[in-house]
Amino acid sequence: MSTRMFKTRPARTWLTILGIGVGISAVVILVALGYGLQGILLEKIVFGEAMLSLNVTAPASKVVVLDKKQLDDFLTINNVEAVEPLASFPAMVKYNDLSGSIFLQGVNPDFFKYAGISAKQGDLFSQGEDDKVVVTMAMLKLFGIDDPKNAIGQTLKFKVEIPTGNKDETQEVPLDKEYKIKGVVDDSVSISAYIPLPEFTSHFAVPYYEKARVKVTQNAFLNQATDEIIKKGFLVTALSKTVEQANKIFSGIQIMLAIFGGIALVVSAIGMFNTMTVTLMERTNEIGIMRTIGGSPRNIQVLFLAESMVMGFFGGMVGISIGVGGGEAINLLLNTVAKRMGGQAVSLFRFPIPFLLFIAIFGAVMGFATGIFPARRASKLSPLDAIRYK
Image 1 (cartoon, rainbow, N blue to C red):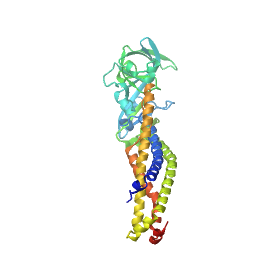
Image 2: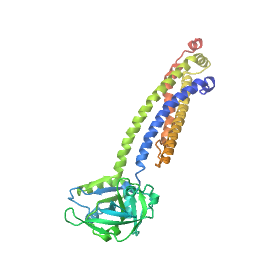
Image 3: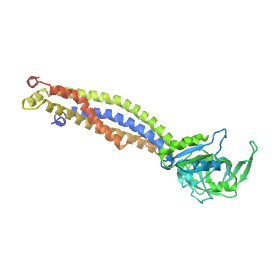
Image 4: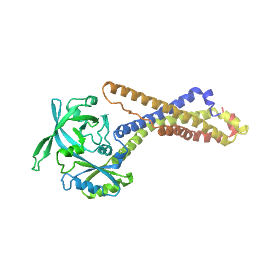
């Protein structure tokens, strides 16, 4: 009986469902925008071992420095599993007939994992590949290379500027081999190149390192290791803290967007309440007949609540369809334009399955809530008064 409205009053029923759907679709698409913005930011971060590492740098005053002795000291901290340093010196790089200033950096392959660095094109070098180099997108743009595919396999030569010990004086040390580009990382800020650390240190002494990645065994030990390293006078940042703060910010953004969508949802709920109230007035005689043939007040109340929940649920499904369809259409349009202009495809709107399930259930709950008052009024009608009502 709670589904008869689709046959007896189809136009009004479907218009009410559509009104609820429009309100819910506003919530769906705005919250999906929040998820999309969050995903675009966080997908740039490589999870896994990078989440278990700490980025350690020395203070600008150089009261303490990251030398070999200090790195070994980090390994004595409880639950620290590995320490990977990064050495860096200014250098001149020669590509074909062009030259430019960069930072040449020496790292071990594990440093990439702990720093969350992955190859945009090609591969990162592995242990023993002393003639390979990994460059950043910023360095390629220095030489006018827009497509990283064109850089793979090209050769570079370096001249490194080494401090002499005297203030502001450096000595230029040319590296006596060519290095083949094996990979390109998606870094458009740092104009630098990476070569294996053993190759780096084989040409000149490294008095201290620029930074180090300290990896702990479990996420629970990050704070403990951070406190120990800070006590030694170093500066520490953790990727996990950045992700945690970003998630908090985006949770707030999603709540604000949901509130804006909720305004449209309130209007839809008022429309549904009005529909149920009008339905009560139209069916007063019917309610009187059902009461006189044995229907209890509870039966009447359940009938009206079931009708409102059915409309609410279908409204939720319509809202999900409109929201997801609209969001995916915008994603497709943006990605088509981005590809034509040489950009990167992104998903501006994202629809997690748990969120969509919540919306479907929420539609039924909203229908239940808006049907409570009309259902209670219907259950309290006097059977005789209801039959005589015109």
